[in-house]
Structure formats: structure tokens, C-alpha cells
Amino acid sequence: MSSLDDLYRRVIMDHYQKPRNRGQLDESEGLTVQLNNPTCGDSIALSLKVEHGRVVDAKFTGEGCSISMSSASMMTEAVKGKTEEEALQLAHIFSDLMQGKEIDESVDLGDIEALQGVAKFPARIKCATLAWKALEQGINQIRH
Ligand code: ZN
Image (cartoon, rainbow, N blue to C red):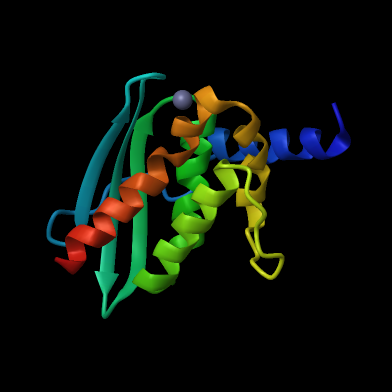
């Protein structure tokens, strides 16, 4: 195992053990999307608060493997403060990352980069993309 893999593994475990933005927003504050990944048993409830086209808060609860939970933690951290457009764009970039596609180097993925190795394990891709699918659904619901 390379030292980079080791670093990535540590970043993933850090988010898994100390999830950022864990919790649920009050119904009056935002909308909640619930999604499951039956192949692994992961479940997530993502709450989004969007004001004037901007994600002002994102929280999640759920249960699942380290990949699904760390991805949710990283995602909520990454989208807070972003516009709906920017958040959706990031979801597309993440999808590309999971398909092993080349990512524009100017994009700063931060901790999300630690999940790029998941692309090599097709069975785990659904774990990593679960939170991002919830994000896309949530934003689409808010827009319609
Ligand atoms: Zn999983």
C-alpha cells in the first residue's frame, strides 16, 4: 500500500469516526431526502436548507459502511455555502471521479479526493455516491 492510499484511508476513517454536520434540520427549516443502498445496507437522511439559491445548511443522519458515511460527511462539508448550481456541478464531478474519469485539476476537491480509490471497487461505488444522489434529489425538489 502506498503512503497516499494510507493518507486517504486515514481521511476516510476520520470522517467516519467524527462525522461533520451530523443531525437533522427541523421540517420548517429545510427539506429531508431519505435514500438507501440495499446492496450494502447503507441508509441516509439528508437535510438541506437552501436560501436564495444557496445551500446555507446541510446535515445528515444514517447508518452504513465507512465509505457511505464518510462520503456524506465530506459532501455536507463541501456543499455548505455553495449555490445550487455549484453543488450540482460538484455532484457531477464526484460522479466522474467514481467512474475513474480525469478531473479538471483546477477543481479543489479537498477531503473528497480521499474517495477516488473507490472507483477501483465497483461494488462500493453506490456507497460513495449515496449522499451525492440525495443531494441531487434534494436540490431538484427545491427547484420544482
Ligand atoms: Zn456501503
